Image (cartoon, rainbow, N blue to C red; front, side):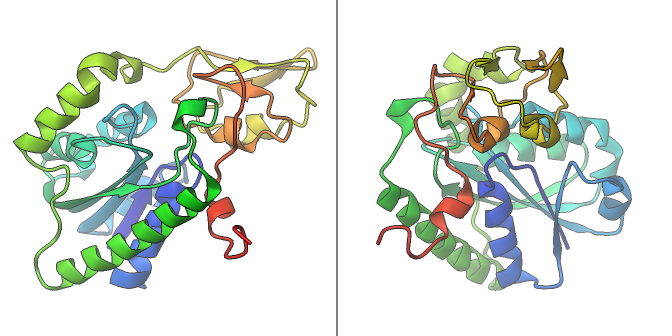
Length: 259
């Protein structure tokens, strides 16, 4: 077994690592950004995918990865973990259907509500205590899912036509166009920016560059919110106008955070 993830703020990576620790301690969790991923995928029959849902669908960077490597999925048995801030409907099912198109067998799906990575929209923010609670609830849900899988009854969240209708009419019908292409809406406040260059190093799309001493964004943003949440000067925004709260997963794993 191998675990494959794409993650912006660490939710999906943490969920996958937690799952594998309980289900198969020998399995490794690897990012789609790592070199040599195709060869590593070929070595395994069972795959666990983990990723953040965007408008009840798959981040474009992950969708492109699956399509680009379409010949790898035939005969693979796939379990899908979808992390989300609120509601997704068929968050796991969207990737599942794409993988099935290329010959994979989807054996189950799991939806996990976790801290929202969109950190520049106040309406989506929850109190620190609630976010810590959501992570603990996700851990408990993973444990139950692993137990069910070991008993031959994996959860099927997001899989099936009822979930599909919920995802389509719940979000994709209204917002699905936002994830069909990469976006050029990333904004960098040059007055706040301190020129540290951290955003250029962590962007999975190489969408940010330093031009004439200023950080400039291009048109290949996959909306993972990694740069927005990591920027020490809170100088980057995407959907909103200012950063309300940066929501990296490590913030909610500290047991003393609420004290």
